[in-house]
Length: 283
Image 1: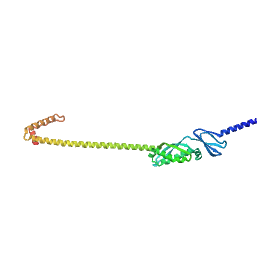
Image 2: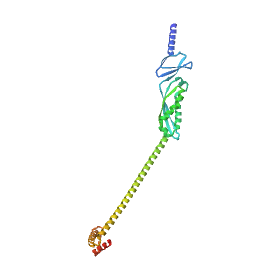
Image 3: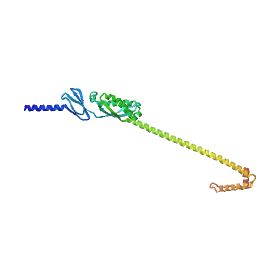
Image 4: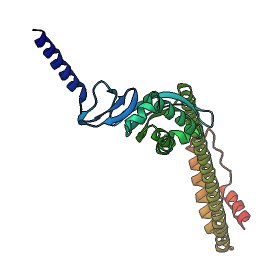
């Protein structure tokens, strides 16, 4: 019985030793092995053998791309505007031993590095440029931190600016400014319309006056010509003229008598004498 117990203990010890010496690393992972507290090697995916009781797996690192969310932060632009910016970084660990031994916590380190670089880049830009230049900020940000994290065995695949917006106070100020600008444009447009209307109205009055003057000139010339022709036609022939003028005179008096505004109509006692006076005046 004592021999069986010893054999059992030995078997269990061998089994435990085998288990400790065989490491199966899944795909997409790497394991950092320390030998007596010192870095020894990095295990890749698949079956790996280590020395039991001497080698230990100290760190398990993923070899897949890691998505780091960069928290939002307030950034002051060159023209003293406050904007809120956040980003997302995609990294990949190339050398796990550098990532675990080169920095205390590579995730926190990269987040702080991105935030610091982002503040520096946006701080050199005006508000309008910062809001409209995401690609430029992205390129400068990637260039700024790629060399730094390379020392930790990490490569930056890409970094994207998720949101870049003015702060609430700045948004209210921009909205008020935009409303004031729209009001100013409306006022200018209304003033220009009134000015154009006034000019067109004045031009219309001027053109109408010009046409009236031309019409009066033409009418005066026509009257002058008519008077000249009448004078030439009359000569010393009084009877036809007296007949025509008398007829016109009687028609005028008749129209005056039928007018609603007429109350009393006075006729000259000697109509022929009146007509002769008109003829004399024409001559």
